Image 1 (cartoon, rainbow, N blue to C red):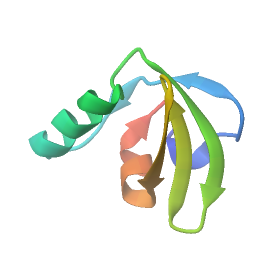
Image 2 (cartoon, rainbow, N blue to C red):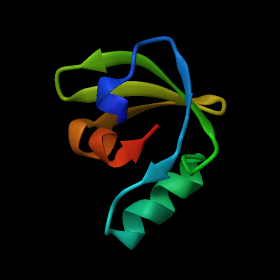
Image 3 (cartoon, rainbow, N blue to C red):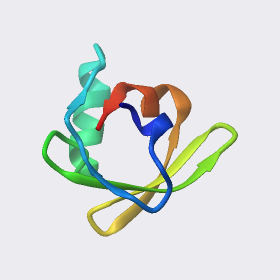
Length: 70
């Protein structure tokens, strides 16, 4: 299951991030988005979704949301 399919307001655990871009992996890691970390979808938007990771809220586009497995 990916973030695109997640229910709003439910906390999930990140299982994997499937991307070939090392720079993107490093960026997500700096946000606290990595395997084993809890993540909550706040809302789904037309171009992506708003997520809560640790104490921050981030807007993630659809392509990235599809790459995050929960």
